[in-house]
Length: 200
Image (cartoon, rainbow, N blue to C red; front, top):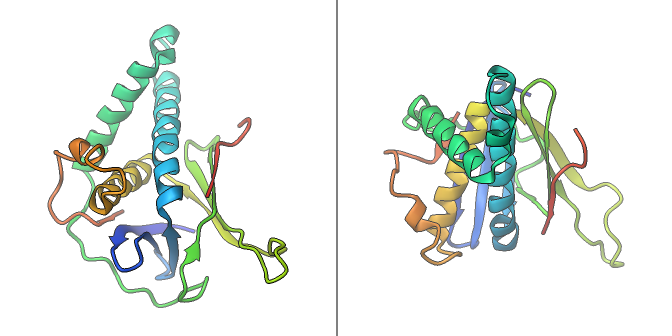
């Protein structure tokens, strides 16, 4: 699945974040992120991205001090630098394209579990699952879900858009809003081991 555009917006009437993923084949995957899921996912995702970026930079520059790359603050600063660099090259102006097909149906997937895993290809894999109880209280044996693999530019764009949607939601008070000072005009769209997982 080749991703063409991402859209992450807070929907006040639902009090949820709607994530839309548009593919180059004009298919759209829709996700609902609840408050609980979003507030737990955001810090976990930032840490994973910081580790992932540091590992990628260490591979590119073997002369880099391993102790420097092991420092959490250095990793975070490097991730923020790479994110800003990536956002400068991102297209936030092109309108989000209407889909021709909805493989998961018109009703967005209510995400209850997110799994994130760096891939040997240098991409970051994200798996989204909707594990909801049936009438008998048991979880559905066939939960809806899918996986996507994101290049570094799309990962930074996704994290940025999620941060913006969280700031709009005001779920975390003014804490997230303070980190959103360097906003770009027209935002809303952008093109190993134990897997970190967040459950709603």
